Image (cartoon, rainbow, N blue to C red):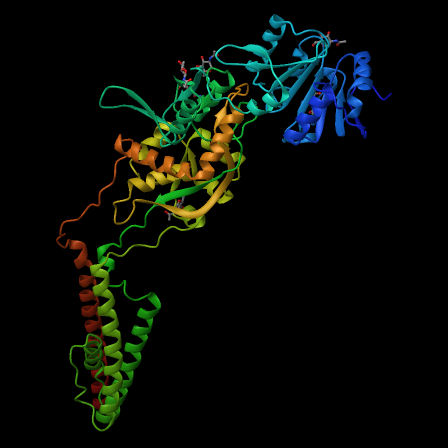
Length: 575
Ligand SMILES: *[C@@H]1O[C@H](CO)[C@@H](O)[C@H](O)[C@H]1NC(C)=O
Ligand SMILES: *[C@@H]1O[C@H](CO)[C@@H](O)[C@H](O)[C@H]1NC(C)=O
Ligand SMILES: *[C@@H]1O[C@H](CO)[C@@H](O)[C@H](O)[C@H]1NC(C)=O
Ligand SMILES: *[C@@H]1O[C@H](CO)[C@@H](O)[C@H](O)[C@H]1NC(C)=O
Ligand SMILES: *[C@@H]1O[C@H](CO)[C@@H](O)[C@H](O)[C@H]1NC(C)=O
Ligand SMILES: *[C@@H]1O[C@H](CO)[C@@H](O)[C@H](O)[C@H]1NC(C)=O
């Protein structure tokens, strides 16, 4: 027989079925069928007994079986890797309550079913203590079977732990229902992590525990008739929630965290969270820049080139007709045409005048109409500097990205884009909140979607938001509600959370949480400033002044040029 002191994997296949009413083979088949289990884990630390059981009952089942004959042989990490996360049935053959098995399982397989087979009558005290112990370790799917008398026993946990005779059918019917916990206390870590969890005192002086996750957890506990016991943690950081889950002073945190298997368990991962960077909305254009704003630099250059060309051409023509240079007059004419202010080209003779007039008129018309049209529309609607839309632009503009120590660890682990690290500054949680809740535009912030929605709600009534998300998602991770590792309701909470997500309840919860957080003043709706008519300030006159100075200097330059040219001509004539 292939039995060693280590793990053995054997396939027991047989054709015949038993027809006995409550014999072991029948029970195992029933459980396997109903729970759609493909592999059983058989545990028995007494080889001789195992052989007897084998020949008597177990050889009949048509299923893969892994047999362990000692606790030392069972490595729970490897076993979990091997059989995965589906439903499992442990068949434990033991005279004594198998405390050692639960220890080696290291809080894994709490969702599995345990069929404990003993060859002695069930002694209430001994087995009650074991059921209580298993319950404290988070194992609640237990079924006892004794061969002496062939009885099947199930346990009832609430309001008191009891062991009662039952049937397999009944066990299967009630194994997933834990409807009434009779006020069993569940300790929930309460701290301020808006909008996921927060508390406030309402108008009647009662402390209200609210928030997206907090409301969900409370509704879950209500549905189970458990009592909600809030436990305030020393600080508002998720780091402290992790610590109190680890030392088991609380059962659950009303928050959403990334997996950390050393410290706590998580509800099923079916929801991917991601983060965005929130950065100041683009600043309004400085008022003196309005005059040059309608055209891009290249258009301005074209305009200058056009002026130079056409003025030189006109002057040449003039020289040809009169043998005299008159640069400044044509400069003025061209400027008038561009400003659409009336020009005549009177001094040019012949048909050339009409052709040139047409050309200059068209150009001036096009330029001035476009320019004035755009300028007017800009003055009516506000105009903004370019918005920061990529991480590279963020880094270039030297905006510091504030993160708290917890997020820093998280982002180091879950791939924050490399470029961002150069602008990251780690500050305490309080400092971060201080800047972020005031929508301080000097800094950028990283926010996960749920919190981002709150900050967007606060800016709902602004014409232009103060902070805006950069539309690049990163740090994708599965998050869930963190729970103490030994907590027996893990499976139930996971299922409830899944149903809430599936039915769309989570959306409603998120919206309500945002509104409630706003209504109790964690954030305030921002209001648009400058709604009144604004008198022009001096800024607006900077550009016209520049234009005036430019015109004067142009005039001066052409005057000087002409004067010199005239003198040179005179001196040549005199020679
Ligand atoms: C179980 O197996 C894992 C790797 O497969 C190993 O790291 C771990 O030390 C083992 N545990 C025990 C108790 O042997
Ligand atoms: C088998 O397990 C029982 C219960 O855990 C224990 O009391 C007993 O000493 C073990 N026997 C052997 C041979 O390890
Ligand atoms: C809920 O638990 C309380 C004990 O805290 C109990 O009195 C009550 O009957 C239970 N509710 C239901 C519906 O069973
Ligand atoms: C837990 O809270 C204490 C008190 O506020 C604080 O000093 C400590 O840094 C926090 N620990 C973590 C891991 O956040
Ligand atoms: C558990 O950890 C928290 C936070 O570090 C601490 O305040 C509390 O005293 C600890 N409780 C126990 C029982 O160790
Ligand atoms: C950003 O900061 C660096 C050094 O601190 C400086 O050299 C650079 O000019 C700054 N850039 C901007 C756009 O302010």
